[in-house]
Length: 111
Image (cartoon, rainbow, N blue to C red; front, side):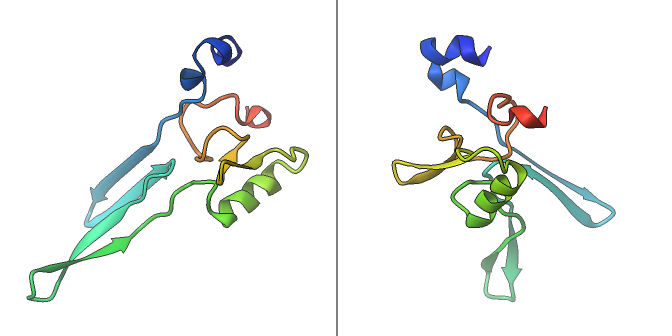
């Protein structure tokens, strides 16, 4: 499907979806994150009425060195697994996210 759409509709062929889920069970917050979303918890600060933002997750994005290193380790025989394109790091030169729903052409070895 990707190869068929690549020339006619590249915006569809390079599309993925991020997903973020949060569940509270027995007073415990569980989160799951796929893509470049970030989970942030707002916490009331004392009696001031202020709110502090607490980051609970990190994005799965090739702009982070740790993500690029992980991709290189997972795909040691692919020198183009991460590419700096137009000043932005991209997976296979196409997308920034390294964990997405429905991007089968980016990681053929993981099928």
